[in-house]
Length: 351
Image 1 (cartoon, rainbow, N blue to C red):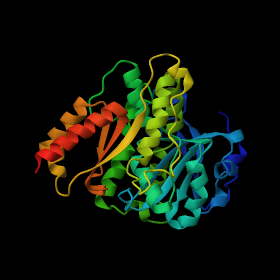
Image 2 (image 1 turned 90 degrees about the vertical axis):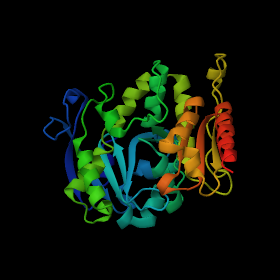
Image 3 (image 1 turned 45 degrees about the horizontal axis):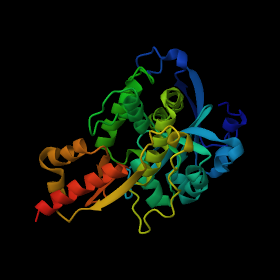
C-alpha cells in the first residue's frame, strides 16, 4: 500500500524531529538491528497536538483505508497505570503521540481512528493497551491485527501444535527468520531501566533513548504484517479478526456486557459454504470468590494449566494489574462452556 508523501511533511511543525535507521527487506540478513545496518531512514515526529498528525489518520474514511503499526508505552500499563506514549508507524514516518503533554484533548482526537474499521492497527498483544485506552480515555480499540494471535493461527494452520500459554513474545517474533530474523537487544536495555525506575516513560523532554525505544517497538510491525498476510488463509483471517476484537475487550469489563462495543465479525458466507464451518467464538468472564483465586490457579499454576490443556480456549487472569477475582475465557462456544464448567467445579471443591 503506497502512502502519499505529504503525510510525513504534514507534521513538520512537530516539537522534535529525528531520524533512525529502519532495516529494509534487503537487510534481513543482519542479525541484530544494531544501527550499523545499512537502512532506509524514516522521520520520527513527536506529537503534542492533533494538527501534527496526518489528516487521513484523524479523519478515517473508506476511500483512504490505512494500515499502521501501533503500540503504547506507560507506567505499569493497564486501567490504573498511566499511558504515556502511543506509537503510530506509517510506511513513511513514525509518530510518537505524547499522551502526557497532549493529554486528553490529543488522545480524544485519535479516538475515531483507533475505533475505526477503516484503519487496521497492527499490534503485538493488544489486551493491556486496549484496557488502558478504554479506562483512561474512553477509547474502544477496534480492528486490530494482533501479531501474537496471527502467529499462533499460522502455526496451527501449518500443523504445528502450540503448548497452552505458549504465546510468542515480540522479541521472539522479531527473532523468527520467517518474519524478521533480528535480535532486539535494545528491548532488554529498556526493561532493565524500567525495573530500576518504573516512571521511565513519564519524563519530558523525551530522551534519544526513549525516542529510539518507542520507535523500535513499532517500526517492524508493517513488514511483519505483510509477511503474515501472505501466509494466513481465509479461515484464519476470520479467527484473527474475531479474536482481535475479543482480546481488545478482554480486560475492559463494563456493566452493559460490551453492548456499546463494535459487533464481532460474523462467520463469512464463503467459509460456511465450504461445509467445515468454524464455530462462533465468545468471551466469557467468570467471577471467582474473593481469596479463592490461588485454588483456581493451583500450585505453580498446575490447576489452571490442566484446564487450558483440556479445553481449546485461551484463559487469562487479571493478575496483579487486575481486574482481580476474574477469569477471562476466549474461544469457540463449546470449549468456553467446558472451561467454565471445570472452573466452577474447582470453585465448588473449595468450600
